[in-house]
Length: 255
Image (tube, rainbow, N blue to C red; front, side, top):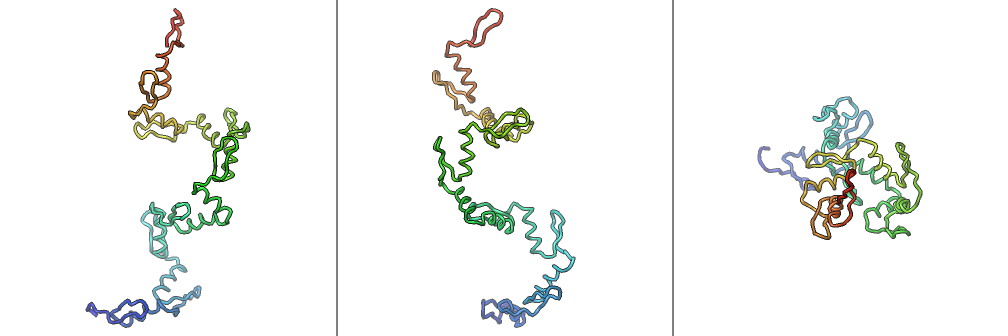
């Protein structure tokens, strides 16, 4: 028993054991024989150890505790599944859209949301380069009919979405939601350099040019470059004869 020899070999999978009793226990895995019955629900098990683990389901004993939230479980496998909630691991991936989930049950729910062929086919178009629905006004193409209908509102005078603060109307709900930030103090877009916050992503992008050496706006006359368009526009007045700023005392004008 203390040697490295395992003389008892399983004829099914070739696993070796040092004692015949261990081999006999192992062989139950390859058979349909289940001699150990649960006295509560009559479920059958091939091993007594499996029955003992199962019996914990019917008891109030929960020996396996989560170290993060102290929630307890009757089986270690349940605890291991639960621990995924506290991690960033998402091992269950949907092959169509590559969306990942921490639990198999969540993946299955996601797949069921596209259970019918029509829903699935529509969804798959989102992941393809096919844009079958073309706008008759501007020829822009879309992968779904509903997206095209939303886009067509841009070309119409219909504006069904009303701002409750100033009564301004918008053709799309997304435009209204963007506009509502004008009336709120919400500033979700923060500059990673100076921590200044902005209501719109576009404003943040413009602001970030302040921290960079990029100057995309070039004067066509003297080639001087500017980080912002309004600075270029101010500069262009230098090259023109337009003088918009007048002194209220002597009427002298300045560009």
